[in-house]
Image (cartoon, rainbow, N blue to C red; front, side):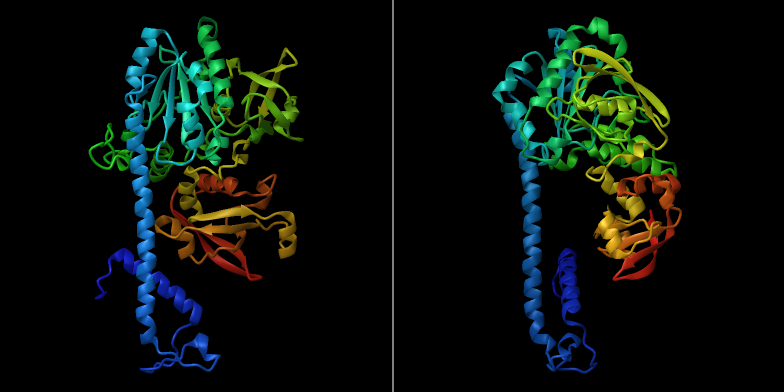
Amino acid sequence: MGLGLSPTRCNAVSILFILWIDRVGWCKSGREGNHQIEGLAKMGRKVSVLPILPLFLFFAFVFDGIRHTAHGDEKNRRETAVRQDRQNLTGDARWLYNDVESGFLAAKKLDKPLLIVLRCVPCKACTGIDESVLHAKQLQSLLEDFVCVRLINANAIDLSKFQFDYDLSFSTLVFHPDGALIARYGSWQHQLDELEASTVSLEATLRRSLELFKDWGTVEPHMTAKQGGETPFALPIEIPGLAGKYERELKWDGNVVQSCVHCHQIGDAYRAWYRKRGEQIPEDLIYPMPDPRVVGLRMDQRSGIRIQQVESDSIAETAGLKSGDEVIKINQTPIVSLADIAWALHRAKNESSQEWTVNRDGNEIAVRILLPNGWRNQSDISARVGTWQMRAMVLGGMVLRTLDPKKRSDLGLESNDLGLIVHGLGEYGEHAAAKNAGFRKGDVVLRIEGINTADSKTGWTESELIGKLLSQHTSPTKLACTVLRDNQRIELAWPIQ
């Protein structure tokens, strides 16, 4: 530009210039010297552009400097957090650091179950429970009964064994020394509240896991369903999109954070692989590890297996489940955590059934849950990090929210209008497709080509729409779309990438 600005600073200057022009208008006079600015013309004033330019550029540099400083500080924080974690725990007698193979060897030697804590150290999510696991006194005596491994990256994990909720920043897996999985643990309560430090649900899971370990001869035949399923790749670094970018080991002599495969990248890489092949993404990758709410159950977060509430007219109520029931088996497989329940649902098919055994007032009661066609797409995936990728694929980077009945009425929407409001818009790359197509924050999506309002039993949500569009369109296209903006119905082209 002749001003010595870097490309990123040029972008910052351009953005600010656009905002300034949007605020005060653009010169309409076509004359040199003093220019009549449309936004100020109504006030009868003339403004000279040149005196304003140095001040504008000054603020552009200040703004860009602040932005770069903040980015640098966050990058340094993440790098420091990982290195500090390694320094603190490498010599800790309790924890084997980033060494799964040694963990299994120790478990066999000591005849103890193996506890693997998978922790994305740079992420702030789950900081509370992670600190408690490392330092809380009430948990330390329980950990003595396990061989403990802390795993901070997913570069070379065995994908046939390590199948869990990849969108969580903290998860635990309990293995038998022979390699069989005993239990999964992961908490969205801790994921959504980084300061939540309670370990009550984890302690309950570990104690139940110990009971299964002690009774392994009896329970082993019933543990098959807990094991991981077949995978198209053995290791994350073999999946296209990750292959060639990451190595087995972290680069401790360089930028260690950039050399790390984060767990959520596994799900991202799988979905991208299917998408680039022009194939439908499997439903269990769109709606992974469903929360029991999808069948109408709200679980006690402290217990993990106790039903706190059964929603009326739900799958669970129809099956006969009741508040206070404790889920102890699904299809005869022992259940010890909320994540175990989520895994059982994760592996379930459309139009299938499961036998749930519950402890009700000291008695074991068996009920059969019927899962109808489309049950899984009632899951709420809006908070999952993996959903950002799918928003780019079929929403053009938009974040959508469902309007409540009152707002629909206030806007005069018809019964066959979708009623999804654009809550947010991506700004860069593939996430900016909707913005570039003319969509704006606050637009209300009324109609999308191929989407029938009658196809949703409870009203369309962003989560359900993502699954529907991914199943309908396996290659890029544009769909006719109608939005409501400032009480006007506008036709736009919905981008599918």
